[in-house]
Length: 335
Ligand SMILES: Nc1ncnc2c1ncn2[C@@H]1O[C@H](COP(=O)(O)OP(=O)(O)OP(=O)(O)O)[C@@H](O)[C@H]1O
Image 1: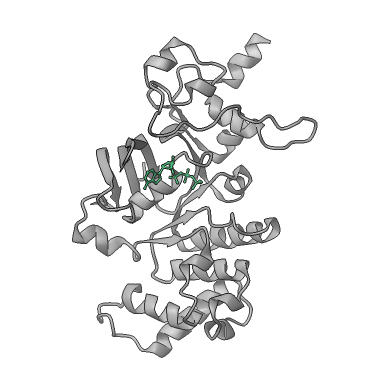
Image 2: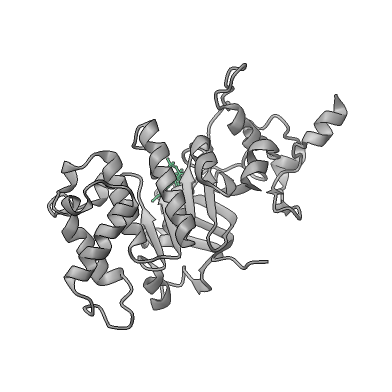
């Protein structure tokens, strides 16, 4: 079996607040193999961004408490705060943000911002930080802007961020995430700010370039349609816990966790009205015991209130953490 590039095991972390410890991640398991595109899905407030920030090392210092588990990227402990982890960030793992406008400096041209990135983060073939000329960097930048299908890439370098559309800015962000030749990109809701047709194009570009270059992607989204477009595998998170992990086809065709089923049922489909999930994600300050989904779950029994279900994996890679999982076969036999 191929070993993981990103390996997260039993990660629990919380934020110290005036009202106590907000237990945002509760023994999360997640792995991403080299070249794999994994979707991390769940409603707003489930902890997707917190997990992404933990990998990237951008959690609020002094406020964060790690209670268990680890994050390893390419074998390096990313929670150690050591130099090895620092070196991977921005090089081996890069980031595509939710709102590209907020991530650019409005005062500098795109070309200047790309040049700065390349000076510090792009590989130098052993020649040190200043081993390549500005001209060579510019040629690489133009080639990458062309690869993300920006017309007239040379002209883009002379523009300021506000002179580009939202979709163009996000294409530039994808180019900037790829320029350091990373092994993994973390994309945190990268298309939420864009309209639907542009979203599909951007996801298409991200998937194509990641597959061509063998780059892994961890893609957080609350949009299951986007997960369908881009992912090989889907990880469902609920209130800081891993609920289900499934290859894309099984996720959509044979969901096991009641939360996954309810998420899918909340999508519009021909011939039926979408059914929302009653209630809301619990506050991490007052998370329920046992399975955190139990207050909203139609299948919950006493055991769900008392005992956290283990994440049980089948040989085909489908894993579910539920005391009473759905099974299409059992349902069919029942009818
Ligand atoms: N610095 C912090 N201090 C206290 N609580 C926090 C902090 N950052 C996040 N949280 C809480 O952690 C929980 C998870 O937030 P997070 O942003 O990770 O969720 P999310 O699934 O990414 O949601 P969204 O899609 O809205 O970004 C929320 O309840 C949030 O209020």
